[in-house]
Amino acid sequence: MGNIITGYLDSLPSKKKEENDVLDNALGELMERIRTNTESVSHPAHYGGADNVYEAINVIEAYDMGFLDGNVLKYLLRYKKKNGLEDLKKAKWYLERLITNIENE
Image 1 (cartoon, helix red, strand yellow):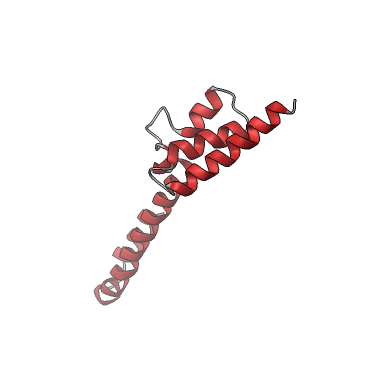
Image 2 (tube, one colour):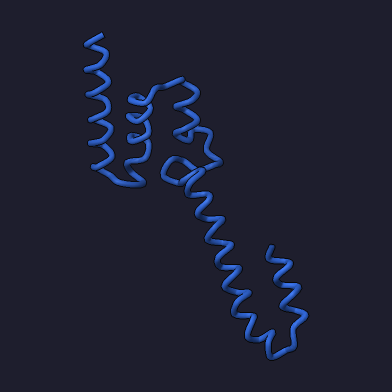
């Protein structure tokens, strides 16, 4: 998409081209933000990132974990990179609920 717009801008008279260089730069910045946001949704750094074979979702799926134990692991894996003590408390909450459920089986 950027190539189409850049080609169009190159065809404009020089005065218009100067004005549109600002728009072209803004488009480039917007496209970079979209790429970055996609990475932060698909493979956020606080879960290990796309290149990490131990990314939280991969481990949870490999061990066929359920909602409760998967969340325990997720919060333990990310606490140092995201929410610190809050994530540890969340992991504890999910672990206690998992223990209670197993005890009541």
